Length: 197
Length: 197
Image 1: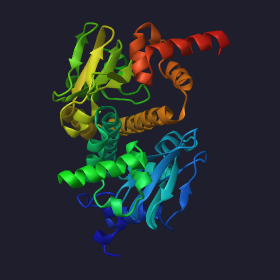
Image 2: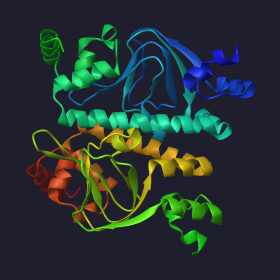
Image 3: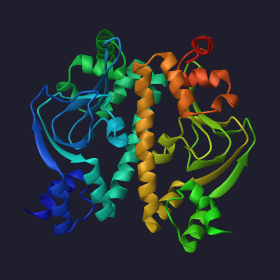
């Protein structure tokens, strides 16, 4: 296998360089898994020991509230990570469910293996620490937008954050991500189409 | 200064060990600052280049929505970190305001200085990376709790997460943190007092 073709450069960064030995070590820690469209790969209440790097496909995490309502928390497309981070980081039961919206090819890794890679190859820790900072900021940004922006503004941000995702996901996924009804979503789309913005 | 008395062990961990040289280097990067009760140390719309380690005191971050309503996002007490992480991590304008609820002694550090410490003393990066994971999980937990728990459950979680904070903060701070009115907060407290739970 050509070094630069390794999945390691997809998962971390093409800007980092790895020795052959490092690549083999990292590759040995990840497992390639494939799922059909519609598969629920995690159910809330179960322990979750892995996080997933999305090589291909589209997934979402969602919460089912006490009243039975679904709330989509995150979508993940190519090159994103997905997990229930409450369960994964704090080694407790998952709160969220993870569903494959499209057939997906993922690379899964356990927390212990991730720690081993950090310890042996510290540049991976720096890289992931920065990624974690960006994820934290972007999650916080989205929550604050829910408090301070109109549904139309949030929808426009969503289409920028997840370009081309609308062809894969159902209207109720998007509506439950934005915290609005599917009727409001249609109204917003019509408004935008009319104004050409 | 005795090595083990250094602020470095407060900011990072008493479980890490540092050489004298490392301690002097880290100390040179932090600035001790003091603020009176009521000081707004960050206003939304300004650039924020620092994060703050709370040595003593009590602070909160809050958002003012378009309609003028205040939303308390985070409280910070001794040993917590506080900043507008959207502005700090992505080098953009702050969305939040930071207010000292009590007189506060803080240690401030810029992003560049933090990066310098990581590069020179990698164990600090591991330590902060793990802290960041916990913060991310706990912020996410709180958001999901808003979607799936009753106001009473959220209030009980709050008193566990921030023990003894109620003596420092105003009722409307707590209510705006929980996303409820001050009237609902009083009702919940009465209920709990009655049931003795």
